[in-house]
Amino acid sequence: MIYDLSQPIFNNVPQWPKFRPTTMTIPHLTAIESANVEHLDLMTHTGTHVDAPFHFFPEAETIDALPLSHFHAPCIALDLRHKEPGSDLAARDFERHADQIKAGMIVLLKTGWAEKRALTKEFLTAWPYLTGEGAEYLISLGIHGVGIEGLSIGGYDDPEKETAAHKVLLSRKKLIIEDIRVPDAMIDGRIRHFAAFPVLIRGAGGAWTRAVAWDTGELA
Image 1: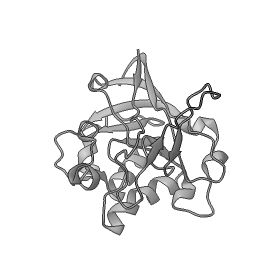
Image 2: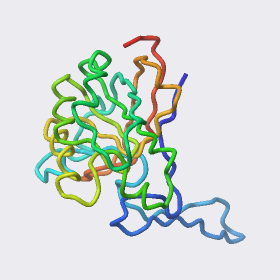
Image 3: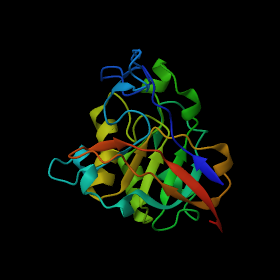
Image 4: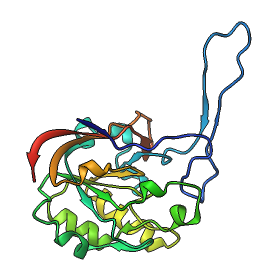
């Protein structure tokens, strides 16, 4: 079984609200033209995307400088749907799952936020977010990276909330995947393999990806 963890991109898609909206146009074709060609105006951190260390560290690696091995690993999906809107995800939230989280894994955080995806104040500003302390705890377990259903791994409208987890993870070259959708079927304690290979954008701190996971038959 292959699971699609990606969110679609479309005109005025929900995204980080401090940037101008995404626009997507489909030109009207003339009698001579024979193909539909779309035009997109969007930032590299819109929709399901991965972050590179350059996103927060100007001297660090950009998307095109990272090896393909950076973008795939075994994964485990954790059910965190009990968390309140705008709440923090800290070490205490992961301690109960510590026996499931193995070294080298990508940890996928299902908060229920993917189902809320819309142009609402709640979705755009109040997703459960990972704290710096939570990121440090996950790193102590040897993780390869983290994926989250909110627009960002960090929180909104507070510099510490926005940056702490990013800086902790990216400074250690851990993979960050944002705006994903974790299927309910993956909340079963099974280890799967995850891949989110980015569009090869030269010099970028982030890039769009089609994030997927597939069954391996392994239990955590």
